[in-house]
Image (tube, rainbow, N blue to C red; front, side):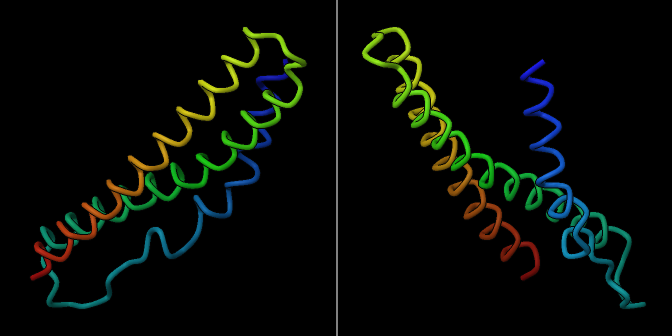
Length: 111
């Protein structure tokens, strides 16, 4: 039950980001080809997914910190908290690198 509440709260908190107009902007240039529009839409979807991933990372770092503070010396809980924090840090770094790579590829595609 707690997991469902957390999922609903997370979705409600990020709904404005998901539905934002900047994520799905439409190009109104009549000279734009369908292929260019498709590539642009794909890159925007990837950028949206990476933005969501970058928003999730700090949340899990905070959750891991809370788990660590409430472990009360229990080695199993401390290990789980460390694992959560480490996973969140690695995921955030990977998302940053993926976003940088996406920007590089987008710059090459747009020429």
